[in-house]
Length: 601
Image 1 (cartoon, rainbow, N blue to C red):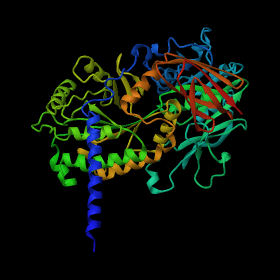
Image 2 (cartoon, rainbow, N blue to C red):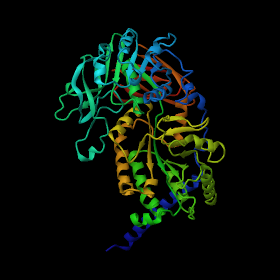
Image 3 (cartoon, one colour):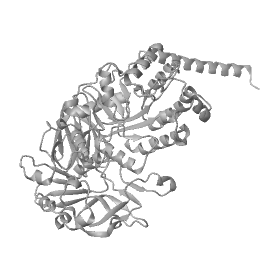
């Protein structure tokens, strides 16, 4: 039996705890204006879309030649490799010159080049081998984006010598069970892409039928195939990416189409690291989680949601989806940028309700997230009409919130930026979305608006996604994961239901990005400033003994660089700081336009 004294003490304690909780909440509300965007008052910085569009000719026109940064591309501009090389040169500040054929390149003398990237479709495999062999006396890196059929390659002794191929192990190629990535090439260590269970079988989407070449003993392999049965090491692994050395030239072969999309960005940068005593280049240093089409405030698709969840849209969004999103964010450390859409359908009679807007703005801000705007409806409404209706909703709710970030459908970033300039959309300064197939991952959508491309979908993570993730972290220190809530609120398949969707998304985000905790988690507007700095800065770097001197142009505040060495450690940095990513890889934070990096054995 509880005595009166104990009962009084317990009641008093509970009252004090309740009072402290209420006072804390009142204090947070009093010092935070949840109807304002803390990023809206910040100066976004300067940038020129004309000078720094990664796919425009001007992107590399003014960059310095020499210092290992003059790249020559041989092939069609519209080939997959051509687009990847263009982006890579713009991001890493390398000068790029293009020629349709090797013969055209050799016919001139003005451009020599430090790196030669060849599209397999533009190489004359019968005659170009001898021409390339004549270049091996130069300090040159040669990259083959792919190789031809076996019979074409075996008919050219010059190409076999160039590539370090002694012969063919299995005519007609072999069927692989998986792929092995050796450590030290891409950031993130080694990886085995082999399905050892039925669940993992769904992740296998890499090319598994490949030729098997016997390589010279002096070659170095970075990516190799895994055959069925016991793996006995290098001799039992068909090479997919390797390096050969001929006189002073370093020759790299990349098979399997890995240079045809964004995965090639990191592979090219890793090739540069393998071709020199050090590799130092700028990175974005931003890891983003974009939650598209959330929250929403209209009672839409009620019948279907009632059937699945026994609740309407408002309750599903607030009581089912939101707690799961908080759990994903807290466990992974990602900051959410929630791109809201007050409603999905603008032609019906359902109007959004304003009562929960403040709740979401408060919750998002308390979790160091950001509220953005989704620019697309589901019934063909124009961007201008959607914004007119959405801004009326905000006014009705008494909210003065100003959006600085928006989500646009694939290929819609430039249109949205134009609408913003015309006053037909919020005056955002950055747009997130999926880049079109031939578009740049990071760019200026207009003179003042940046574009941050989506790198991964939260619910999907196959082996090619992991290879792309490692590559983009290597080249850019950047990721942007898309969590599409519209699929959940308007499900077409059972896997779209939140129970299944959130399980996949939570598992993927919480597992596959753990390795990259060295990079900063940011919201879209925080990443915007970093993307601007990344696109607009330029630099030069030189090494003398154990000292690397870095000079940065157009440095606004701070910038991030990634340094890769060979069995050297960073001892100190003047004009910035550093942190170790993994063996022989460091993140350099630059705070001055002149930086000195001191290495030690």
